[in-house]
Length: 127
Image 1 (cartoon, helix red, strand yellow):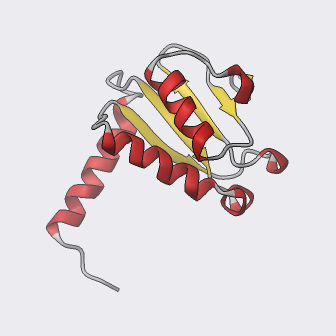
Image 2 (cartoon, rainbow, N blue to C red):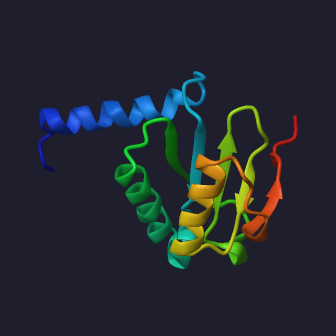
């Protein structure tokens, strides 16, 4: 196993800081790419890479990009969920890189839901 270098630890610290931004009120949005086995085989890695590139290119620091496992809709993969502060989450399905860039630009950055790619709005959790 490779030894960790100080720069590796700095990357881990930065990633963890980004993951807590939205919860602590500092983030504008949280984007979750569903990367269960079905999502990965359908192309979720390309979606994640596309979103990472957009964030890095635009030097965005207040958007949290994270992953989750299977969302239970394997036939709709690849999928991602966008959560804007104080708004219900929106689940997007059947994604490709172009759709992911559109959703990122329109919904994440501008706050406009891209209804043509959205499956639904709201949380699937029952309180």
